[in-house]
Length: 448
Image (cartoon, rainbow, N blue to C red; front, side):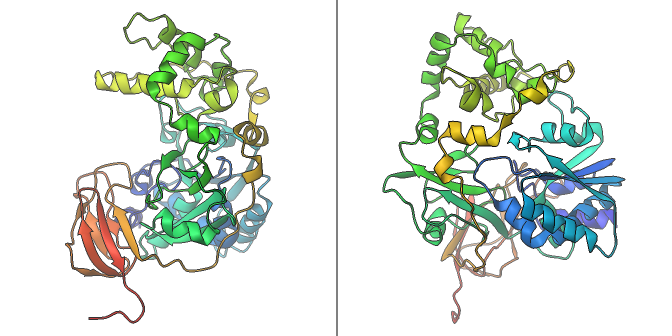
């Protein structure tokens, strides 16, 4: 049963839907004491996990139970913010009606950022501290996003991952959440949300804190949480367009050494050796050598330091990321580091999401994004060959071939880390490139 489950998770392309896309079959292969469903959805504006739980709580619970059986875990907990009342009610109903009851706890999280970070979530739920630079399994825990668990439940029923729940929000006339075929472009989603409210806009894929700028041709992948449309002159857009060299010069000349970036750092508060302020000071006083006194390799790049903590408007996050890149190029292998104990003031330094939303200038966009019960049928999909941690998938089809939804169109080597890519629509392959398979969708009545 366990080996069959692991095989199905790989065969049907289940990866982490809320993060980097780590293949779930690897997590299912581990031995754990505790499995946690991450329902925190702590990035502002995104609503996908909440809307999914309102409609498919039983399937999510089913996926959680599957992961319990695969890992041998004796405990299961769903970590969810208490304020998500509709999602909580749906989960409570699903657990009460479960014909094969397994003890699954609900742990109610506070409304702070970044409650969904794995290190933070594991501590909040279990009281355990993941070692610096470590992963949850090192303390006997496996964490999965709720949509990942939904996909686990689908996979054991023989259904591949070919759709994704995404939120389209921000400066649009009708914010919404919907399930769309993988490879659907933003251009196909914007009309469903009523179009942009402004003429000059920019797009963030993901949340406002950790998301990245993309253009309107960007496509939905297995890890896409949503697309946030904002005016092109919004600070969240202009700050992302600043060249890193300017950020470094500003850090050298403007850092006032207040250490607020460290005092509010979620990893520092858990007892990790990460000290963003020391990295900023090292940068300011270095004479050209690479100075990293504050363990930048431990940074999760959650963005709290730049978006909330720094009174000078600097970006310790980008400095940490730059240092990590430089060190990686020089072959540096980061040590884990020691734990210094949870900070005694941690509970007083958790940043409320409402305060963060205000600081980000997003109050007017912090609106419901209800689920659209309408089947989205894009004219074509562009399936990226690397939507997961590991090696890219290798195309198995060629231009002109007709494919059916759910058919494997790209595969990874048997001994490599990764998962196959499945056609998200039925249609004809029109292009194979170095990074994608493009399929023109078949319309009703189409035929040879």
